[in-house]
Every structure is written in structure tokens, then in C-alpha cells.
Length: 552
Image (tube, rainbow, N blue to C red):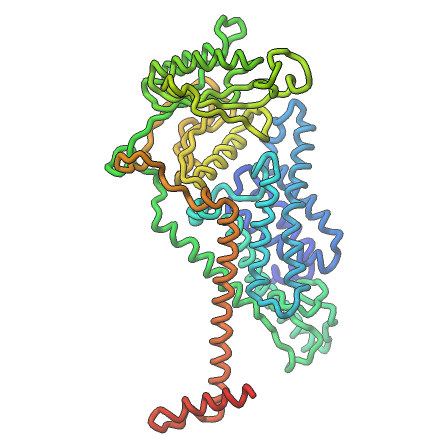
């Protein structure tokens, strides 16, 4: 009772006291579903209070969340740049940016639930926030050069819903997070409202009628349905507590529970290496010892020597990002020939990662100078052992600049994102990172956020080889079918969101019809009609007649 009274009397103090520690826990580099859902639930109640009383306080809320995000990543952020002050400032700005993005769906939710027409069903009002939340992050991350790094999308604690990724991508996870937040906020709002009911009754008992401006959790009330808000000032016998959204909240909780059921039928373990249904595949990550400044060997020489050392034990060998650097396209072509010889002699495929000027491959690229010759790009060439097709494909990064993993938290976040991408595509991801805080291993294909972890913290000087099982297709020369998300992309995400909205709306309509029938049955029971028995025929006929005339 004391806690409820505190929240009712001092909502700003109570919610701010919760927002900072919760954001410090939830907004780490690898957020979890429980922590983000709990934070969002508090923010739902807090923004409802702020937007009803003083919308300007939303700036203070964004600042609080930015501070919490900075504290959550303090260790990694403080060492991102040469200057700790600059690193923390950038981290604070980044936290404020994503916090402002997170507040947009919260404001949209308030507008829909408080200002929408009464014709909008309680279910659509309840499901509006999770839907807007998922769609908002879809648009933000698709236009963000660093993708979902720094976003509020959970990377851990998603075991019950990880199966959604191959159907919906991250949008399904975002929807689930916001859905549980809506459920928690709804039930908490009803719990808090119970305190308001008791306080109002006590005030009326003492001869004081509350003002009509007093409403749920201390903010002005405008007569909405929000979580059983009470219209104070009415006579005791006429006061009712309309709670039409409580049913939709329970429907949402049931749908979220049902969405977790498939996870109980999916093994959390990766496929066995040796089995009738799998084929073993060995892969390697090349991380040679650090080159001494006076060494006569070039970085390319060291990479090729280390590749030859692990090649007999692997089928696919991968170099870390920007393993070697080229100044011209001529240098790159000569290096490819050396790598192709190694691939052919050892019968392996080699993923050669490199860094080169952005103008390589264009006319006159051998002439150093000019603006584009100073810009660098990261690339990777898959070199095969087949002399007829020495380079299977080349890929160049389109967004990120050259970078290094400088902290284990950053390394784990990047590896987790790679694993999530593998889950979306139904693929295994070979993650080879040579940074000082690197995380290395095989991810994706249901392995979870930790994957098949080989090296917890990379030191840039320890190559590794791993074997894992891939599905055996009976010797047929065909690719495994694509996942739904790999085939349809964001269209699959939109289809999932619309599907959940439709299912919930259908359940709500069924409840409404059931309640209407029960109400009519109660009215008919009051007339004593259910006691009329004429061979079991009269009562059904009279019931239909009553319904007919009531409809006229």
C-alpha cells in the first residue's frame, strides 16, 4: 500500500527513480528481453503521466535514459577513442539519439490510446504500441549506417522467441518485447488504480469529494479507458470502473505465451558433428602472431604462412577484417594469385579480407593522389581451389569504416548480431575477429547469442579450427531452402504484425459476442423463461423471439 500511494502521490519521483537503474541494466551492448520489457513498462506509465501533465519533461526523460545508456556501456565507451572525454561525449549523444527514437512510439501510443475515437477497439489500442515499436526500429536500423548496434533490440534472453527470427527477423523480437511491456504496464496500471479507488473512497467517506481533474496516478483525467481510469467526483452509487482494456491485455499475454510454445519443440543444441542427418564441416580462423616492427615478412606473408598451417585441418579458412592492405588494384591481383596457389595446393576455400583505396579498380587507380585515393574500403574475396574460377566472388562493405574491436562487450555484441543474422537466414556464421577484445566462433543456425564459442577474448595471435554439423541433403546437388525472412525480407515482418493484429481482433470479437449472449441470457433468466419447459422447444423459440423484438 505504501508503494502504491507513493506512485500515486509522486509519480515523477517514483518513475525517475526506476528509469535510471533500469536503463543502466537494460541498455547494455547486449540487451535482454526481460530487462528491456521491464524498462519499457515503466516508460509507458511514465510517458503517460508526463504527456498528460507537462510534455516538456520528456526532455528530462531522454536525458535520464541517455545517462543510463552511457553508464551501461561505460567501460567500453571510455576506451573507444584516444580521449576518454570525447568517447563519453559521443556515447552520451548516441544514447540520447536512440532514447529519442524510443520515445516516438511511446508518444504515438499515448496519442492512440488517449485521443483515438471511441470506435477503436480496446485490442487495437493495446496492440498499437508493440506494432509501432517494431516498425519504428525497422525503419531506423535500415537507414542507420551501423545497423542495430546501439539500438534497444534484445540480443540475449530471447530463447523462447528465437525461432521467430527466421520468419520475421528482428521485428518479431521487438514486437514481443514491447508486447510484454504493454502487458506489464497494463497490469501494473490496474494495480495502481486499485490504490486510487481506495483513496477516493476514503476521501468520500471523510466528506471530501476529489476534483474531476484528479485521475490515474496523479495526472489530469480526460475520460479515457486507459487501464481502468476512474472519473472522480461522481456519486458513490454511480461510480463505475470501466476496464475494457483488461481483457485485451490478457488476450495479448495469451498470444505472447502461445508464441513461445514452438521453442519447446526446437532443440537449443546445434546439430551433431557426426550423425546420419549431418555432414561434418571444418572451418578455421587465421590469427597469426603480431608482426614485429623489424620483421622482413610482410603482413601478407604472415597470413599465407598461418593459412598453410591450419589448411590441412579445415575446408574453409577465413582471414579477419582488413588482414592485409593494398595500395593499388595491381597489388591486390598479385596477392590473389599467391592466395589462389595456397588454396589449390591445400584444396581449401580462403576468405581473403583486405583494405584498399576506394578508387581501386577504376581507371588510373595506380596513380596515388586525389580525394578517393585517400578513402579506404574493406573487402573480402572468396578464393577457391579451382583454377578455372580462382575468385568465386568479391564483397565490399557499403557502410562501416575500417574498425577494430577494442573491448569484449563490443566483440560479444557484434558476434551476437552476426549470429542473429545467421538465424534469420538459416545459416552458420564463421566469425573471425582479430581485435584485442574480440569474440570468435561459429554462430547462427539456432546456436544462440554465445554460439559455438572458440575464443572468449581474442588476442590477435591464436588461430583456431572448429568442426560442426551441417544438414545432409542425401548427396543432392541443391541448396537448402531459404527461410521465410531470407525470401520475403521485411514483407514477412509486416505480414507477421498484421497477422497478430488480426488474430487478437478476432479473439476480442469472440469475447464480445460471448459476453453479449451471456448478458441476454441473464436478462431472460430474470424473466423466468429458462424454467419454461415444453419438450425442450419453447425456451429456444422464445429466446429467438425476444432477440428479434429487441432488434426492432
